[in-house]
Length: 407
Image 1 (cartoon, rainbow, N blue to C red):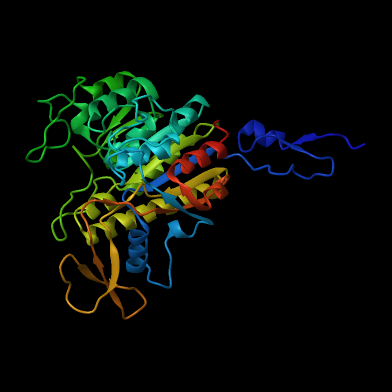
Image 2 (image 1 turned 90 degrees about the vertical axis):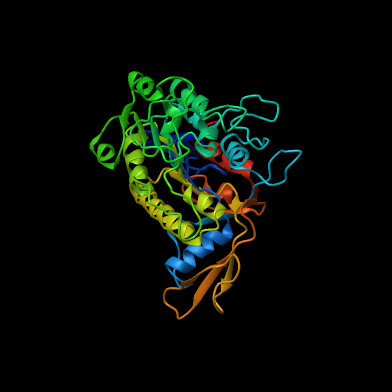
């Protein structure tokens, strides 16, 4: 009779790269076994539906090329509707909560179910497993999407409460983005000047000083971020979002610290933990510019997101035990791609030349709000096959948790 099983790959298991695997005496892996993801990187193009993704492709690399985010081996489609009696179309809070916790909720709720009960997030599960964690965004770091991964409040508007929970409860090692106004009390302007109608509005005192007392190194700009090698980082690079939103010709995508730069620093910092990490990366500009029906702004934000994807994929070459997931929480703007057959009409933006051709396209909009269409997801790394096909947004959470054995 064969010997039952022998352990192999023990050294790798100790290092955390893959779990020790029981193999049969002839060297075959057990049926259904998959390698373990030590690291998880979830990249979100907020508001990025299939049309935004294809517009970015056509207008940047042409129809003969492709984006880095499209070259991943696994492709799926994600339903985005919330568990809301009054609304069929999700907001960012409900969508991010589903992605972060595997449970649907009502619009506006962050990290809570429709009855107000707290939901455990993938970031919190990673923390319990001894992993490092991080939130990085060109939005406010206390905005609905990052907040759903590391806080629990009944309303996305409670951003100072969210910041307080970051410091006292979830404690991500890396917090990089905008939203300085929520970390300081009224009357303390901070490092970033307020525009008309803006002011500091924190409700828990000076949270930046509280963060520093609790072990965070605070950085205010790109040069300070580049210079630090601290293991715990808080970077606030705008008083609100890092993008100046506005209609075509008025809004500008000019974050003071580019998303790829923030992403690289986060990867360098978090990867020092031999047990691995969970990292949330978000390009908010796609959503904000789609709300403004600003196709040029969407294109600039899309370029930045794809450059960030390329940065993450460079990291995975030396860290193949990393699950990478790229998705959108919902679609914004009801965007359509059309032939450029004359001057733009109505809500059209363009024309945009298509590289490698003599063709141009225009972009048309049907709304300034979210739409209910499903969003594409692409993935690579251990456990990425769970994202193949058409799934619910709660399935993205389940794929990440299963890949890293966090359940």
